[in-house]
Length: 175
Image 1 (cartoon, one colour):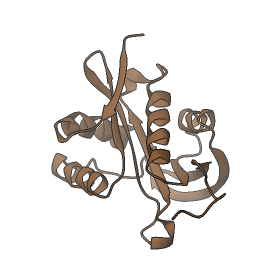
Image 2 (cartoon, rainbow, N blue to C red; image 1 turned 120 degrees about the horizontal axis):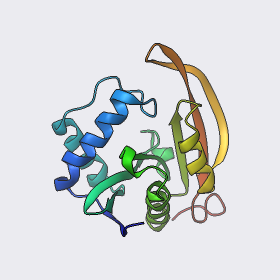
Image 3 (cartoon, rainbow, N blue to C red; image 1 turned 135 degrees about the horizontal axis):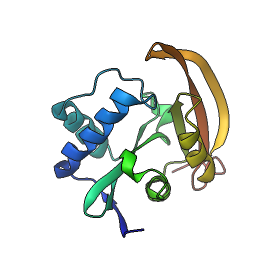
Image 4 (spheres, one colour; image 1 turned 45 degrees about the horizontal axis):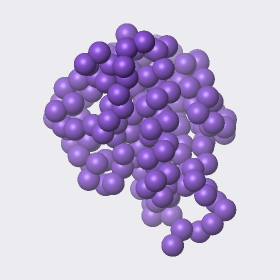
């Protein structure tokens, strides 16, 4: 395998990130969006996450962005402030090359370093074996399934909830 580099995302990466996400929207069920967001919308989302203190990474493979991962607020209420929800998307050419695992490992490590205590994965489509497998490999536990909550491509889709304890998790109360 070629050299894989995981680094913080910058705004110059957003055209490639937008293209990866657009393909996921148009062709997959990992996201429940029906229309790909424009670059301006993806830029606003990126800024909201990074300005909010959340990590956002890209994977570089053979000089190109092969995927990206980020964490954001799980819910807007303040009691959830130590819990994040993760997202990871890959260019289809990068599947099964270890890119997702390396992105997730870096994201998990950074979330722990920033003091987050729980990471939630909300996986679109219970048939998404690759994402469920990736999260399981990273130590996530299955929490539950919300059946038939999305409709895309003419079929009902579930969401799968998985959770990973980070750092000290619930063993202590943060200062």
